[in-house]
Length: 607
View (cartoon, rainbow, N blue to C red):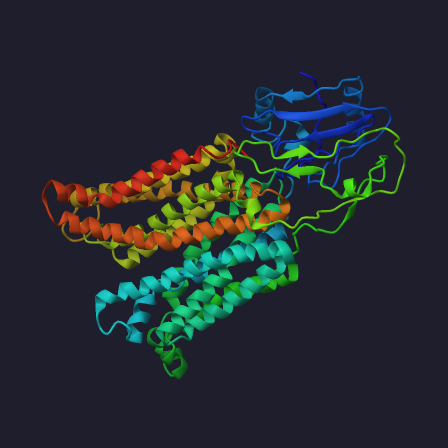
């Protein structure tokens, strides 16, 4: 196998990769593959020997090289002999390089060294991310009492769940309707203004929810929260733009941690600060405002999170959207391009028919005849990216996997408090709300540490695709453990509501394997960002993914709770039909993860 010499010391991964080979006597050096590791597809290097011309491909992609002059001389020496054919680096050789790097792109030590994370930018983005789960979950402890206090149910307790369900669902529904528009807007005007406007609007909507005393006002405020929270896809675009292949896994592992922190802090705020006039009469009891608006205080405290995020972002967040201005090519380019050819993109973006299709082709062959030194031309994009550009398999496959993950995860989050609080005779554990809150709160704290310290190591050990599939399988195991926990509770029950050791061990196992699901999220965020057809469609790609996820999350609570209720009704019939029907919800939520795990193998082997 011909040695192509050391690779560039730093490669920023995008869909089309152009290496800037700064060596002499080479007219073309172009890699037409989306990854250095292609996972089953050869890495093809096109090379054409020339005289003394010096060619540097530029402007087509964001791949960058920091090769030193000594590396350039070595590469030039390796490629000096006349040789005009296609070189194929097979997967076995590529795997050897990757394994030496612990899953990185090549075995060169300089390439294996991770790029330091931009800590300030990462902190700001993560803090913005925390705003969503805090504002989404802060209402859970008091929303039932709030609905009852409005009198909208007419005193019928059975109707409370119906009205509460609408309040909780419209958040994800409106998020789904707007997330795509936020993503496309960020591709046009930038990431920073979209994120600033999102957190500012989210804070105002949260305050409005606390001041609502009519049901339609609750719905309107909750809708506005979903609208301004639709910029969550833009956050992931920023994450993809401030990281590279050496540190992306570490950076994206913080996103599930942010959700875990927000999901823990939100309910705590809602429960601790609800109805302060009743809880602390000595301080708030004489204030008429808190008697009229008993749930304003938790909403205001939750609004402080996006308010702080706004100021952090305003002062420190940098714009990451790649500039679209005309950029000059290398001054060493000595080829007589005509203006039209030079302005055309060097890489022709193609719509692949599968996830493993080559993503770029050489559009304009370059001739070295009559080469003269001329002013550096410019490359610019003459076509505006459209939504259709992301409706291709390389994008739709990760998005569809994300839909499976979001639906199953949201269903699990609905079933856990529902089944844990259901009486033993109806398939639950009969746990009080305080115990359930303590369990989930403790799990959230522990999950944060697990994601930080374990995810990067597992990602290197098993790879992105295998870790994603493992998380889906773990979620299926967690969903299937509900009837086992109920059986253990009946077996060890003392008749006074206390649970035995085996039940608590089962709960620990169930929530322990569920932590792997959050690792699947980190992998999926990286897949989606890497699947963008171009850097100018990164926001649109993440917007499409978030649109899909929000849509299935809006449907998951109704689906999961309805199936559980139907299972209870069928179980009441008795006999074989009642026995089988009683496990309907568990059968469905074991079958869906099995399908999702198989579908996960359509993803590329690695990123």
